[in-house]
Image (cartoon, rainbow, N blue to C red; front, side):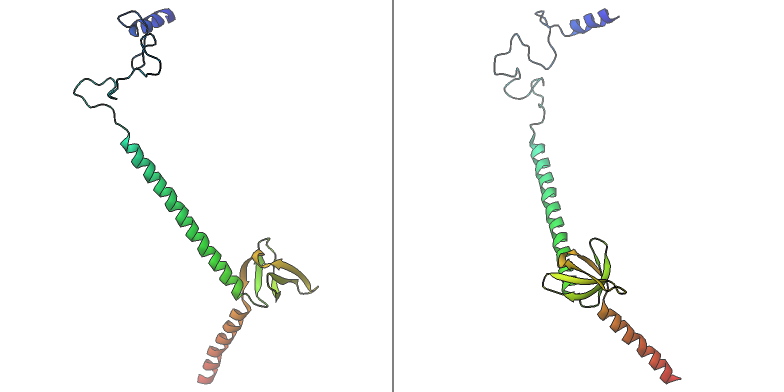
Length: 166
């Protein structure tokens, strides 16, 4: 069965002059060096009067669209990073003494001293353990001491008002 299929395939691809060739590929015996065997007008195997294959102008549009999306992606990620940096700078500027913070390493403590580029954090109250961190190592302010004072003063006012009314 293999011999018959090989013979049939060879017979299908045999040209009139007896040379085996593959449709759409240049014939090695007639191709000139440096040529592709395709007609110069780019029409390929299309009959006369029929339009040829596409010339590739759509590929430029595709590349421009991909490039535009890439530039938009970079622009949007840059904006997000700038906003995040601004938010962190505001958080560090608003950080004060006795604020409860968390470092990027996961250490939680309260601020005991703020220096130019460093923060001294009190880790344990019973042993008075303190550690010094760079300001860039502060991940978040968990609880602000100022916010607690404001909450406690505003919480007392309604209680006083209700006591006066009764």
